Length: 434
Image (tube, rainbow, N blue to C red; front, side, top):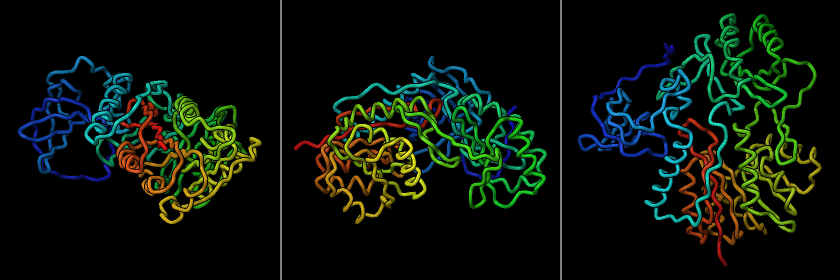
């Protein structure tokens, strides 16, 4: 039985009704109709008759799956016993290939409704269906370590994770045992794990200084598990080993150094394929200058710099700008110009895009790149813009801006960065004629 630690209770008026599911939306929810309501039911599949506890708002109802009356032939048994309770995976009841088919169908439908045309749909980038995550972020509550429950802030303690890489999943039982011995567990905000062979790292986010006895237990655990140990209140401290440690990963023949708190793509296989596809689609040439916006630690900037004359790498976080600079130097690339800039500042972004760029690559966070896309559409932007997105909703908004400015979607393809989840990532190449 899955144990749930409840952080708060919410009471809403709801009713249990039967719903026939017709499709999946971009959030992986089953969509159907019942008693004049458009119903969204997570966990339900097209072709199924289900009962759901529905909460209505106007003519739309969101529901919690209660029972499957008539199952789809596509439904499979989840590999993980936490599936359906843990909010980390929403689609383990569907094969990985079917997940991608439904995600692409949902995105195509969204674009058709918006009147947006795609010249060429590329095959999705696929990797391992399980054990692909090289990073994990875990919540801590009442001395237990876990993930958020479906549809709430409640915590489900976990002893394994089917989508985490095996070295990370294998740490979970010992971590649960460790937490039970700590007196200051309320000072542990959350835990971040990272596996970058040959190293595995653990970063404890703290809300206050741990008792010395607790810190000694953390270090003893790290030594026993061969894990690099870090803690952070304000600054990040390396607790073990004592000698400086270089975390990093290989990419496109380059060595990328990262810090324990740095953002990296969670799926190494898809990241490699994504960067290779980006280089192929954008096709930077030896005499060109390329803008890499939201450049982070240089995941795209450095591969671009191997091929282009110059890369201007623009990032909003100064620490990531410095990391990009360090990675460029370490790899012998002297044609990257790292810049820290607020890419939501219209005046600065407008001035930026007036530079003579031959191509632009942008990989924003979930809020998207509205200001930059508006500036590219308004000005004499380059012919080629490659947009890597982790949020189809904000991508669609930004794509419409680019299209209003004369760009067309030349290529589009999904990337299975988060298999077993409803998360959708995509890459799109925009071409402006003339």
